Image (cartoon, rainbow over all chains, first blue to last red; front, side, top):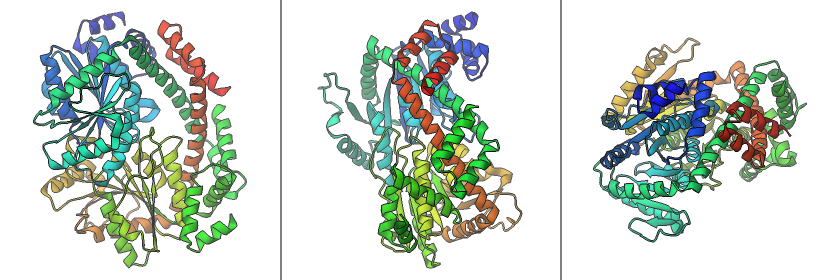
Length: 320
Length: 320
């Protein structure tokens, strides 16, 4: 174990890759490594990237990787593929564009295709991001598709969040915005070389109203956290360098001891909470697989049991 | 209560709308109504529709509504907007196209923008779909955006599921497919007037391989449930009538007493399970808001507590 940790610290990629597989397992070695990671990380800011499928997150991250490498930064990326909870699917999201960086020894990209049960995505993301920190990658970027639950997950893990939007999502852009904008520190509108994107940019500005600072507005000096809005074109690279400036200033702010401790603690509490919840979920599944389930259904259908009574009986059964 | 139920049965739309607001509340009246619904519904098949944002689900449902109305069917629709769990947002998804049917007395469209905590989406969907059944709408259509958790939710509620895909979602189509295809009874590829959609249709066929039956294949006679693949163009309406034929045969199959009971029981167990889980989640939040949280963090950071021990302590705290 000590040997593995040392090798990761020294930048050995094979040890890092091996540790990333190890933390996905249960068992004493895996748990000991995870304990070690919990105690020896939490100094490097984690940048969250989310947005609807196909909006251009990978292209943007590819561009940012190039610029960060020019600055001599070693960058780790965790790309979270939210496959269905019914899926035990292997790695599917091939992020071809980013892959040109995958051969760079100062870039490490890990794609996670964990299913969403038992706090799977969030915990796996935590472990991998911590491993990247241990291997002295800085910053650590986390990418996930944001619809439904995922964006809350990334908000609970990352130190700050970039939410990417693009034109062409029809009516439903409204609801995507509603959810995503609430976790955003920066909102990026992609494809700003197209007129539809300019309209979307305008909508986002109106939606965020007073709380947002526009690009080029240098007044962001006070402590109140405000959402910034950036328009760019990820494919051509226009506006990406400007965005990086914004991200680096969020990165600087997240390095302050207080913010850093705050995020580290939040992540620890999240882990404990998800652990307790998944223990309970297993107990519920177990109880529901027993004869109790038929009794509950009979009781509900005959009117003998109210839903609350049925729930109380299930809780009892799960406790024993 | 009896008066309200009678009026809903007689087709009074205002009573139905009032009951839909009522079931979103807690309290004795709401619970009594929900109990009543649980015992008096479960005969009408619920058709699930899911797929990525903007793929054309509303346009397709609009087309199906037109055709079902020509056949004299009274159709209820629950459109689920998965706003973020951090959102308490009001109704946002304006489904303009479907709205031409909203003035039809034999169509009822309910848009739900519940947040995703405490089994919110699934329970609210259940209650509204049951109310539509009580008001003698048949079939009941349920639409939701499918990424991450949502598609599992709709699979747990609907009697069968249509998954809609379309071209233009980049690399991530792979992972969307992986998750969504597993819950699909029918996979629809939209925009089949475009060559990209034809390529996607080919991909889906390969992905589903042996388990799928192609359009025009009349051999779907055996009992083994197989996924059907349908290409269409929702906007022009091409292929929608053909799809409706497929849906109506799934609808017929779902009316058989056995399947119907199976789905009803699965929904009841889901409700009980979500109820027990949300009680426990509240207990966890409560415990984490206390001084216990700081103790756990200190213990983890100093190495005095392993994660398992921290989880066990949280479980204890949540129990008292």
